[in-house]
Length: 312
Image (cartoon, rainbow, N blue to C red):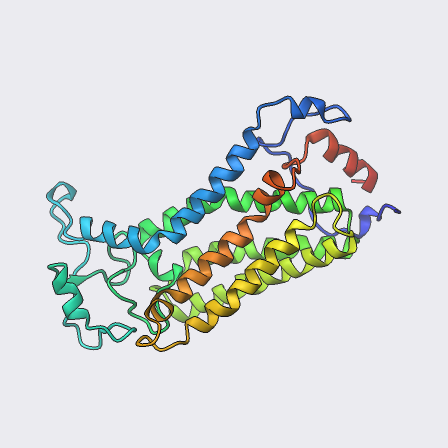
């Protein structure tokens, strides 16, 4: 297979990073003799983010209940959550009575915009049910989401590098794959900064940007896998993306079912769909490492060899 010219690849070279495996012999013996630290990091990082997103309803409710009164040791600055449940226009999006729900927890206030540790979990304030964006709209929730996303996003660049140097796709596909992932990372950071409370329209715009860029990236990666005849473990990537796409269809339909017919779908369907997609997207590198047996991040000497072949 002819090696594409480097001049056609319009992206900056990948820098070496502290988690890259050290130089190895051509038969990988030195690398395989090392403790499999990378596999542990990959698994723990992915499981931590997945556990956090899937447990948000429980975490948000328990954390806000524990801290909404703002105990004396925090400076007598008043309660963290002080939005009265009797506020005009305040209502549950799923049809429940917010006053009765609050009374069951002996509360007369709920967590308003930017209040509490997480977004209010008593009931979905917006129509359409709960979402990850709602739960992490408070500073503590946003910070936890950002910190737990750090390593999974780094790992996305590991498989991007693996795709370029191991599968060796056409330069045009390399460019599209790289810049679509770059656009996703920028828009994902903006998504964390522009929460639903700050400006709902701008938040939806940013969310649309990172969804479109990530979908474009996945489409390009799938095309690369098909063109490479699913060599070197590439078959697992389309399998992951196809599984996510199949699961999204019934979940998306469930979000539009009336609450009196399917309460979970009405209230939690959209949040659950987001969790599934997020875990599928961030799960490509863990599956490549733990299931397909690929060496990620690529060893330095192998990357140097591939760069030399491409004229970097």
